[in-house]
Structures are given as structure tokens and as C-alpha cells.
Amino acid sequence: MTAAETEPHSAKGGSGQHLVLERVAAGDRVAFGNLYDAFATETYAICLYHSANQTAAEKSMTKAWIFIWSHAAALNNQSGSTQSIVLSTTWSVTSKRSQQPARKK
Image (cartoon, rainbow, N blue to C red):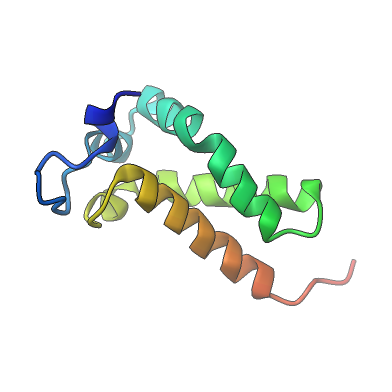
């Protein structure tokens, strides 16, 4: 993934200008794979930070990336770099999940 795909198109960092998120929002699976590959390490670290163990982190990772896939159009309207959007979204998704009481099995 190139900087041109992950950085806003405008110099001011306006919203709705992230090429890769635009492509993901349009259902481009290759773009989604590229986005995942670019930020998987950082998003996994966030998930692990908010989780009790690796299994929980992997589940959180799945939830975060499903959220990113499902909400790419809305995320594209946020300002900032694609990296900041992906990482802050992951933080938000996993923070909410980690604050929920544990379910009894």
C-alpha cells in the first residue's frame, strides 16, 4: 500500500478523501486485504492490550476488522490519515468490548 492510498488526498486532510477506504467501501476485497496487511500488526497490538489472552485478542481483531469493512464509507468521512482512522477505530471497538462484563459459560 502506498502513501497515496493511505493519506488524505487534500493537503488539509479533509474528510472523504481516503482512496483505500473509498475502495473498501465500494466492496473491493483486494483493497481491504491491502489495508489489513498494512495495519494488522498495530491493530493486533491494540486488541491484545485490551484482551485477557491471545484467543480474546483474535476475536477482538475479527470484530474490529469486520467493523472497518462494514463502516468503511463512514470512516472515509473522518479527517486524518487512514492509519489514524484504522487504529482509533480499533481502539474504540476493542475498548467497548473490554468494558463489557464477561459472560458465564
